[in-house]
Image 1: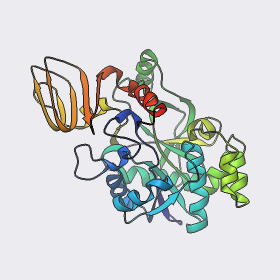
Image 2: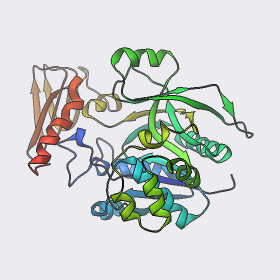
Image 3: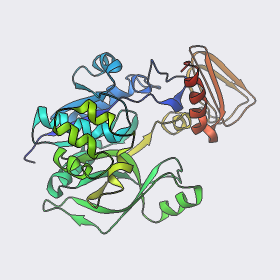
Length: 337
């Protein structure tokens, strides 16, 4: 490929659904969750195929990022307004610093097992050869209602022989019946990993709700650009509107460590199906997730998440793990998150 690959890792979020381990002063990307490295450090290592690596974060987290990822460049966005503004801002900044390149954009909180580099290098080549916006699609392993889905079109192929599929439709968080249908009709999970050139993203963002930010970046006033736009995801702002989106299938196993129920999919369980993090005991209990920075015990219960950190304790049915954000919303209003 005739241009460098730059890995851009997004690490400005908080991870509200992993409360109370994840808090405003200790976002989940700096936690290990059973591993020997933080999620951010593992992501930076996974991006070792790239010629350069940048981490985009909030100004108040920049020092933490440097501690966990000393080998990466650090960018700070003027204001956290979801992935749309973040990715547009980073594309413009990296183009200024690196020049003509292709970006591989990665969240900092995923679990990956397999040949990650091969897929992402292929996505980068497709982005360069087609000048399209590439999303990486993961083949569903279950009817997951918490993920977005991508419907692929007819197979295409670059001159170099890399396969891709034009995106026919993006669908956000379907109900259980739709998720089952999507799984059996060839849809992919939209895993939030992308590849594009900075020019291609800025071009496609220009006529969207992110247009004022693109204009402000070009005129050298990013703060005014952020003031002029609302918080919006890159999927809603750009990918669902453009006709230049394509999907490249992943050849690795993947999970989004977005909520406590994900832990049972990526960590080993005991003979009764209990997954524990920290000093935890399960007696006459099955299929629970128990996590603590102190000592926790569960007796005679099934299918629960019990998490206790810093004197904050959460108990929720596993099937309702996504509802943790409701607790965080209340804590936020009290300044207690």
